[in-house]
Length: 303
Image 1 (cartoon, rainbow, N blue to C red):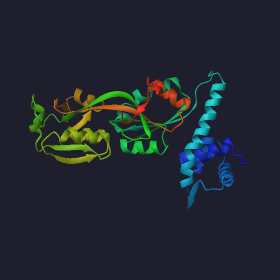
Image 2: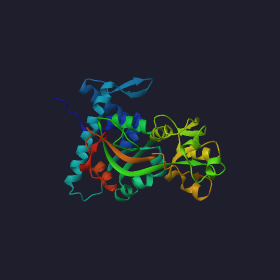
Image 3: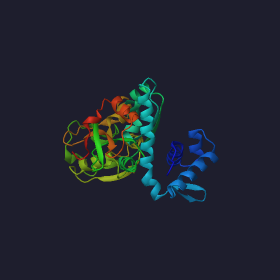
Image 4: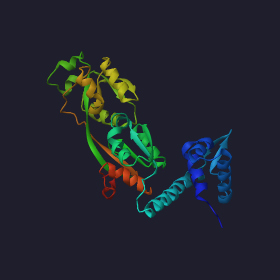
């Protein structure tokens, strides 16, 4: 009979999450030899290698990637069992891994996490900020517990909770010829230089949809960060589609001008994405509650 211990599962998840035996040992308050021994014993009991060894480094094996979500779920269920057994009199603890797309992670992280941190200060939060494509990939690979993204995500294994609406706008430097015009039409944008996010980002997708309604222009520059794009527009290098959250300061000081383009569809939605097969631990439910989101209202991402 296999006698797998919770400590062995903690070691497995710790190494997979933090990348090294040393980091896992520090997190679990164990010695490195104790962590190595626990992993070796777990692999012996399972008769499989959970990690591939390459010059002293550990990388999840195919079998390890398959078993990691189950190991996490077991630990989360035990933690929830202990929390419920305490009559919920103690503070909620544990870990929560949140992914945020670029705009949300850089400009709205306070709105996203502020209430949760205030209510549950004992929870260890890990936030990963990347473009939407990469965040969704990590969520599908069970590397994240939830992801807050911009725009529409269609995937049969994901569910979505709408968080808030947002709007992009075309911005220019004050000295740009279009900045002085009160009434703009689509034809005014012929041959303009555009500064856009990289392919794979939700901002890029929405920008391309809007540009399809305009005369041909030139994609002059591609940048991976909203702040870098904003600074390039301020410098007069071209026009760009930017979110309000990123431009309030520059608009207030006159370094940017927001162009009126009511003929362009630039509305989008921020959503919290969850994996359909992911066990929803108490800590994840508490995060959703902090955003006034009801898990019972989960809908398909392609609805």
